[in-house]
Structures are given as C-alpha cells and as structure tokens.
Image (cartoon, rainbow, N blue to C red; front, side, top):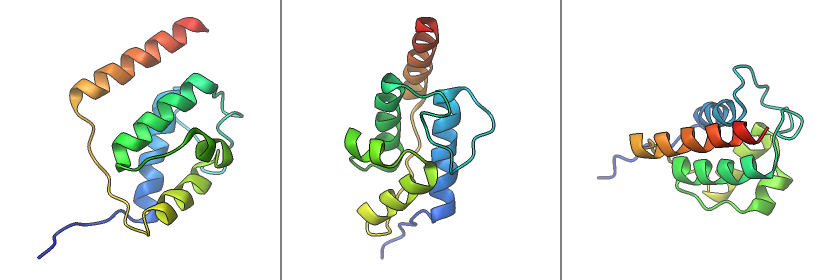
Length: 110
C-alpha cells in the first residue's frame, strides 16, 4: 500500500512563497508579481532553481523559470510537469545554512 501524499496547488504555492521570501528578503509577496519586478537578478534565479529542485524533487530549467516568473505560473508548471503529483521535501539544516550563506554573499554584492 502506497502512503505517499501529494501536495495540493495551495501547498505548492505556500512553499514557493517561502522560497521567494527567503531569496528576496521580503515578507509580503504577491503570487502574481513578476520575480524581476520584486528585485530578482540572474544569480537569484539560479538559487531559486536549486531550491525549487531540492524542495520538490523536480528538474527545472533556467528557460522554464524565465518563462514562468510568477508563483502562480510556476505552480501550474510544477503540477503539469509532475502530472499533478508534486512532492514537497524538507531541506536539511546543512542545506539551509549553505543557502543562507549564499544569500548573505549576494547581499554583499549590492
């Protein structure tokens, strides 16, 4: 018997909001706002791809993210690419520390 529980669209949206908030250091983000309008740049896009791939265990190309720069659009893509079977994986503490360091380095560039 398979006990796998797949993420709803709402749960996927919440997890993507967490990623966007962490990358952009913003508390309030609208799911229909363009990632670049919110302050994104190419290094953050690369970080976003890595975080999304780790969180959802799904391959995501740079091109796909560039074509889907809102959370709403990206949720649709994730659910379409996984045939509606999106899994959410917890990130280890070591990965969280690395992502925080990358974020700190990124803020030093500004």
